[in-house]
Image (tube, rainbow, N blue to C red; front, side, top):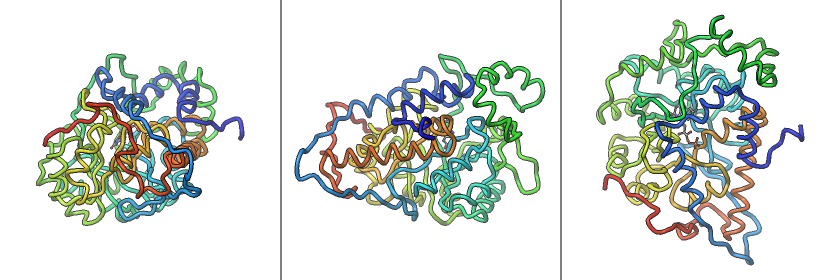
Length: 390
Ligand SMILES: Cc1cc2nc3c(=O)[nH]c(=O)nc-3n(C[C@H](O)[C@H](O)[C@H](O)COP(=O)(O)O)c2cc1C
């Protein structure tokens, strides 16, 4: 519907804020502690400029690429997020939108939909895991992902179980029982359009994590799954190399900020890494991922595929990241805003906004293909970049 179309991710975010109950919107904003990294992810992209040409501009621009053996229509794909109550169709709607726009989806192990329902609508699924449970449990999760047709694994390692935000965290119930529904009713009723989407499908968000269940068991609740993860001994590099070996295929380690860690990811046998600070939701004070990207590209860019996530809100952000050495980017909140604003069509809308922005930026800087992009296409203020662990 024409009136639901939006022209930028910022507009989608404003619609999401209007449409979602306060606590659901707050859960998407997320962030940790003071929100320094969350803010830096966004302000860093704004600090980077572009240098325009005005004639001899490329009449056609090409930005298809490959990541982890998959074809992408543009250097953007879906980062895994474990948010359950945005829309009743959740990850299935996101996966359909991604398939329609020719990009893969990273599916969170804390997702609300079983992986089998997601691979049924998008053949390009990367299953995301945390270091949670014992080795047998992790192997069973790999086996399930493989059987469902996952094309690769994303292992997210940048999590320190920090808690507490200066602006307060939303209350999330353990399960949607009568007590929780009564408590949340005023919020839900204040957002009738959001509530109606659930009512018309007779769907109450179950707040469970079906991909964390072992075969034949009931899916744990979000908190049950989080507890298992918190209780699991933190992995060593040998553990990580073991998991990569067990999968024996395309494997991305997510959450790298330091050059020494990037070398270890390569040595462990991963095929890709994501330069990421978990969207500013983890260790607050970690620099924006775009600030550390060039140091990691210089160190391991010939050995592994390098993805960036954190702060991507427009096509020019994508072009800046690729010019600075990323093969592609993943998006998090951008598609969550689209999903909240208009379901599957909203996610497609976000992907179209990014595609249009990539095309306009490449036209403006006179680049016909991703391979032509160079770091010198980006104007970075002095002292912008950071090198950690080198
Ligand atoms: C609400 C929310 C939930 C997230 N859940 C997960 C998750 O389950 N697994 C994961 O690897 N990353 C998770 N992330 C991090 C994203 O995959 C991604 O790194 C981050 O959102 C990128 O930053 P951006 O939101 O600025 O694009 C989450 C992020 C948000 C905002």
